Amino acid sequence: MGDVTTFIVDGTSGLAPGGVDGAVMVAGCCSLGTPGRAYLLGKDSDLTGLLGVGILVDRLRDLFATGGQSPVVVAVPVTGSGGAVSAVTQQGGAGPVVTVSGTALADAAVTLAVVKGGMRNEATYKLSLDGYAWGAEKTVPTDGVIPVGSTGVTITAPTTALTAGTTYSFTTTAPVASISAVLAAIEAPLGLYDVESVYVTGPSGPADWAAMGAMADTLWNAHRPTYFRAEARIPTAAESLNDWVAALVAQSAQYAHRFVAVCAAFGEVSDSTGRRLRRNWGGLLAGRVMSIPVQRAAGRVRDGGISQGSLPKGFTSAMQKALEKARFATAKYYAGLAAPYWGEGRTLADVTSDYQYEEVLRTVFKAVRKARIAALKSMYDEAGDALVEGGAGGLNFLKANIEGALDTMVAALPQEMAGHVVEIPPGQDIVNNGVGVKMTLIGIPIIRSIQLFASYVYAGSNFDPRLN
Image 1 (spheres, rainbow, N blue to C red):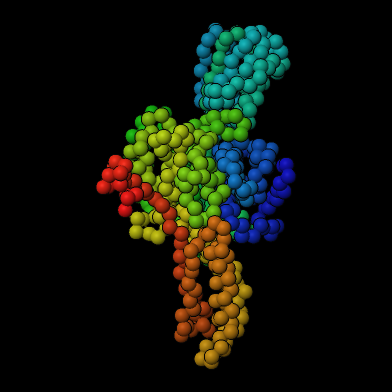
Image 2 (cartoon, rainbow, N blue to C red):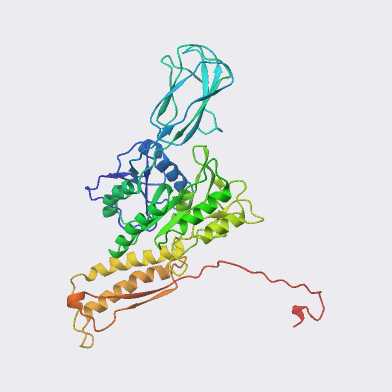
């Protein structure tokens, strides 16, 4: 595991890192690890050794690859279903057929190429899991069983001779977890960990977003602000980009929620293992967000582009704008800059909401978490007598503690809030209703558009502004 300490909790151990700014919970299908058990990971964790393969590990690799500070991640494997293996396509030489067996655990485009013909323990082969990179040349084992990486399947060579130049290709499809399985799996870990967001990997739709939003509302009402990050599906092989954009826009019209953010950006991604696969960029976005202060937009150009990925050929500015208008998080190219960059950090909130942008959500959530911890110091304290000058010592203590907690965000470098106002309205029925505290949080404005106006004059003319 490198130099990173890894905890494993089963929902009863009570281990918890406390409220860590930027901590995220990632839930998704995985081949290893106990479903519903939480794995607390650091940036240098051996993801393959700990959790195996699958969509969850792919997204964790993307998240950890974005640089910045070492993030705190609670990974929760979830039981999925529907993993499948396609029929085998044979090309090249007239060799015998091979068989594929096992349960698919990850997406892969597998090709086995026979390099040297012959019987078992004589013939040699190369294997590719993505159609790009090839493994080393190996000899077919005596039992004929060839493991296909960590996909969960194996290829069995026949007892007859293989023919050099023959290739065998097939695809594997990762299992998919239902939203009910995801929410059930994260329920116990959420009772232990105070995380900023929950990132649910894999394609999702309006029904999934509604379930996430309901849980986010429950956590908000319990003063445990947590938002959900989800992934839009990527286009099918038979679907044009225009049709895909239209389908996502139609989906977004079915649901709105201020505490759910959906990433629609996708394309080829290079990971630390050298693979370059076409997938959703939700993991890259989560990694960028975790590496920046809460008040900062993920699309800030000064922080650099998305070096690991390239947007699909044919994806236009008009498509990006349509998806962004439909409240999806997207990526785009700027003329004159090589890498793609993140667009607006949108949530699925309606356009009338204060929580349209992820940076606003993160700032408010951090303030609420800090205020909650500060306010706990006043639980069961004496409020004092508000009718006597200086007698409401307990209320004053409560107000001062909350202000002190919020002051840390104002004093942070870079500044996370411009200021705040904390009020405890007088005349409250404290005995029966408790104490209500009003917090006004003053945010840092974000430059969302720039207009350049140029005029041209001749030096020394009456219009030369230097002469004024």
